[in-house]
Length: 183
Ligand SMILES: CC(C)(COP(=O)(O)OP(=O)(O)OC[C@H]1O[C@@H](n2cnc3c(N)ncnc32)[C@H](O)[C@@H]1OP(=O)(O)O)[C@@H](O)C(=O)NCCC(=O)NCCS
Image (tube, rainbow, N blue to C red; front, side, top):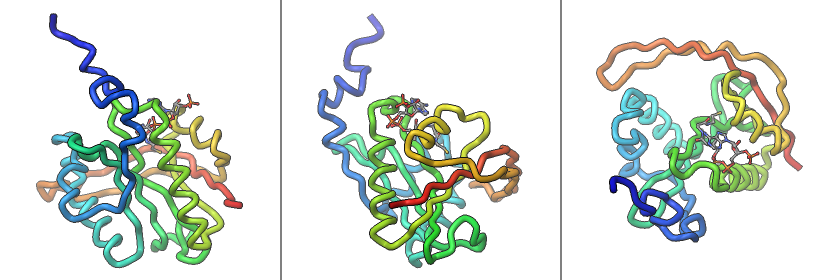
């Protein structure tokens, strides 16, 4: 037998694993875990840059962590950026790099993180949240619509970054800009 019930995160961490998840600010020691055992190593410098923004107060990076397992999700909140239409540091903030490890998806953790992010941003007096979702990512779009986000514009999704080897990579992922008014 090659598979067992222990392969299921619900069983492996107990039926209450969700209640054991802590959502907290990232630390320097967490950065390697954002690479998900290599899958996101190409974003190492992007994450390092985001962490600098976190340290300077321009962004807040949260991770979801399980005792013993470690980091299983993340959500980044940009408070101010060069693109004021995304985050202006006054009343508009931007959510990005939101992801949960595949085996932990569909159990409500993403909804909880989004909910906590919204409450947190509201407590900082932000009134609008923007985010970009790839046009082909219908599942995530449904989640955002359920939360009250509406499409407000098209986003080309063209950007470039230096990968972990110092090589420029170009990305083109057409997206919808969505926005929610907090109340
Ligand atoms: C989007 C995401 C963060 C949601 O986290 P989650 O823990 O699965 O979210 P929840 O369990 O609270 O809610 C699941 C909802 O998200 C939707 N969803 C989106 N992508 C999903 C996926 N890959 N697997 C399961 N559900 C997904 C489901 O349709 C579900 O909607 P429903 O409640 O109406 O059935 C997570 O699925 C994920 O990491 N997806 C891949 C990365 C991604 O698309 N990030 C968003 C970029 S804009």
